[in-house]
Length: 420
Image (cartoon, rainbow, N blue to C red; front, top):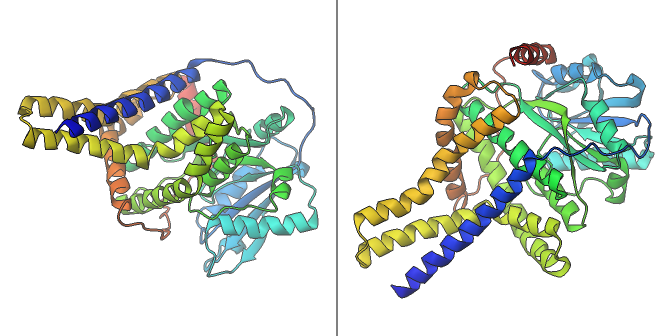
C-alpha cells in the first residue's frame, strides 16, 4: 500500500504543477501589448485556398465573402481544390468566381494531401504570391481578414492563425460547446502565448503562411489527421514562433448532430495521438538541449491531452484501491474524487463566462450552452478514453442544415455591438 500512496502523491504533484503552469500562462492573455511596428508597407499578394470535398451547399458563400474583402482585388486570388468531389462543388465554385482545380485520388484523401498536390503546382509555376490563406469550405470570412493578415506580414510574421469564430453558436448544446471551447482556447491559450512570446498553434482553418516557407518545405508536408497541429509542431521544433491575429476573423460551422460531433472529435483525438507519437520525443529532446520556453511549452502541449488524461485516470483509480484495501473512509474517497471532478466539470463553464465578459460577447444567448458545457466536455473525455482502444479515422461530412452568409453574421455582430 505504501507504493500506492507514493504513486498517488507523485501524480498529485505532477498534475498540479502542469495545471498551475497552464493557469500562469493564461493570465498573460490579460496583458495588452503595444502593436508591433511595420517593417515594410506594401500590399502583399495572397492565395486564398479552399480544399473542398462535396461542399456544393456552402462553398459559394465562402467565395462570396472572400470577394467582399476590404483589400485590393488584384492582390488576391481565390482557389478551390475540388477534392474527389461527386457533386457540383467545382461548378458552383467557378460560377461564384473562384479558380477551380479538380483532384481525384482515392488513395490519398486527407486535406494535407490535397494542399500539397495543389501547392506543388504553384511552386513549379513560381506563382507570384507572397502568402497563402487556408479556409474550410463551410467558412465565411470577415471582410477585414486579408487586410489584417497583410498587416501581420508587414510586421514580419510568417505564419499567423486568425480568430476562428463560430457561425452557429446557439443552434444547440453541441454547437454552443464548440463555441465556448474555441473562445476559451483563443484567449487563454493562443493569445496568452502570443503575448508572452511563446507560440500559438494553427487551428484548422483561417490561417496564413508565407509562400516562401511553402517553397522551403517543398509543399505542405503533413501526414497526420491534424495537419494544422503537425505543421505547428514542425515550426516549433525549428525554433519558429507562430503569430496570432484577433482581427483576422473567420466564421466556422460546427455540426449540430452528436454522432457527427463524436466522429469529428474522434478524428481530432486520433490525429493528436499521431502527432504525440511522432513529435513527443523530438520536442522533449529540443526542450532538454535548447532549454527554450517555446520548446518546453510545445512539449507541455503535446502531453497535455492524452498523457495527462491517463495520469488523471490512474490517480482516480488509486483512490478506489486505497478505499477498498487500506481503510480509506467513504467520506475521504468522495472528497478526493470531488477535488478533481468539480474542477473538470464546473470550472470550464466559469472560465467560459470570464472569456465572454473579457471579449464582450453576449452571455444571455449562451446561457443554455453554459449549463450544458460540462456534458460537451465530458463527452470529449469519453472520446479520449475510447480512442485509447479504438481509433477511428473515417471522415464524416457535416450536414449543413441551413445556409449562412457573411451578411447574416455581419448584421448579428452589428446588433451585438450596439447592445454592448
